Image (cartoon, rainbow, N blue to C red; front, side):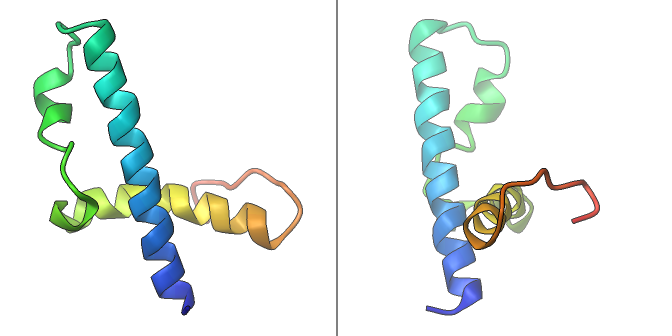
Length: 78
C-alpha cells in the first residue's frame, strides 16, 4: 500500500470515529448547539468535500507520525 493510500484509509477511519462520537453526543443532548452543521458531515468519507477530507487527513498524519517514530507533538507547521 502506498503512503497516499494509507493516509486515505486512516483519514476515513478517523472520520468514522468522529461520526460515531458525534452521534453519541446527539444521543446525550438532542439540542447540541452544532447539531445541524455536524449532522451534515455525518456522511461516508468519500462524500465529504476536499476541505473536510483534509481535516481528517490532518489527524491521520498524527497517527502516521506516531507509528513511524517516537511519540512527539506535531506543530501547526507540520
